[in-house]
Length: 232
Image (cartoon, rainbow, N blue to C red):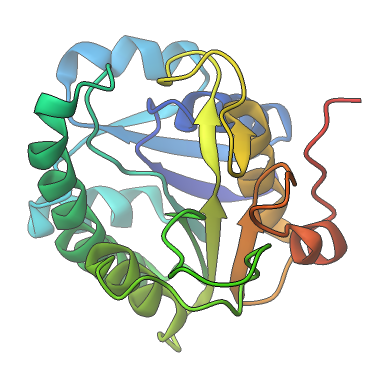
């Protein structure tokens, strides 16, 4: 075994392919889900299940401590299965709570467990209006409070190497899009591959992860993570 990794949100659209990659690479993976009914699915992936709620700080801290991970990967979201405008206001509120409070709890648990690397999912479509393509140095929209909080918490903590992956607009199985959307599309398998690479590669900081269609630049991820958007 290479070592131990804790994946929060292991059965999300990115978490599933990511866990498969990590297990195939020889990592001992513990993955979290909120549902006891999904324990068997985690085990089928070769992942040690942790049934937890990220808002239960004590329970989360216990489960992360038991996993004793060197690396923690934050892939938690709370989005509906369909892109229904009627559901989005509530979904945005839930996602903001995860990004702010959930991230704080997961970081706290990770530090207590002794993790030295923390990789978090963010988004590459929260930039303030400005020149294209957006780079990691482009300012974020000040209204994206949850995204800003998540990124600041991860990047401004001296206890670990903090890496933020700003994912493009996802497509593929389980997402809202079967084909690439415009403005920085990203297939879920390539999103998972970026997180896999960040486990052992890359300095602390932000990386845009998206196919380059003129909206965002992923040049930094290409150069420093060795990440490529294609499947060839």
